[in-house]
Length: 141
Image 1: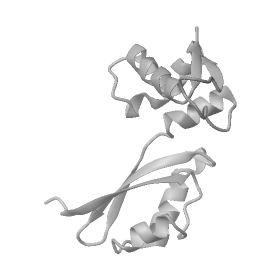
Image 2 (image 1 turned 180 degrees about the vertical axis):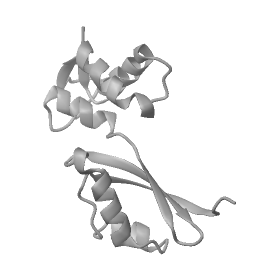
Image 3 (image 1 turned 90 degrees about the vertical axis):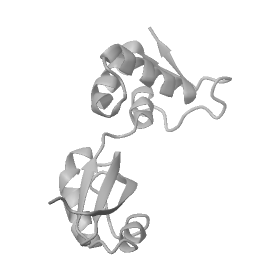
């Protein structure tokens, strides 16, 4: 018989840097989850992503046990990395903060493919290009 699910917690934590401080501690504490157990497991799984923001979905069960699923870092993180910027444009659509090439967008799309709602690479590239455009970053051919 499957465990009964109590709820889900969605967090974005830097890879390999989960600690009991906010936002992790309070979010897990109010559900009665062992915070240190989660932090150790998360840090072990995300050592390769050190310094990158990692979205995680924690499934909390009625017996206070938990499972978690790690997603790939946000597209905006990859786009900023590719454009070598700290942030996007202050006025997206009006001013351009930087640019990335179509090839860079394809690389980002291949990394994000499992988390994107796209059937093929071409559609995934369009999603990434849209994200870049909304950040004020131009995608050049």
